Length: 89
Image 1 (cartoon, rainbow, N blue to C red):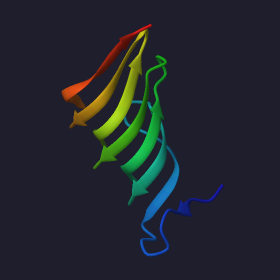
Image 2: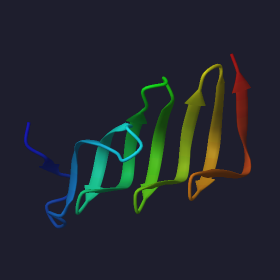
Image 3: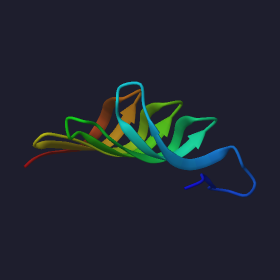
Image 4: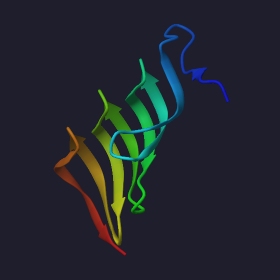
């Protein structure tokens, strides 16, 4: 389906699904084709991230799940930062 504007005042800020360079499938907010805002990415190994993105990187509040482990908290340039919740299933 065609991308839909998230805001009529910002037609460049679109939501759609794309494949990232690392093979992940991203669905969410894009600005000129780059993840920027809220979205979800699923990788071939089963990894999953749902949360905020900035300039194509995991950045802001989100939940990252890899295997039996999840981290919910703040990320800066793809790295967990500060306090958060780490869960082992």
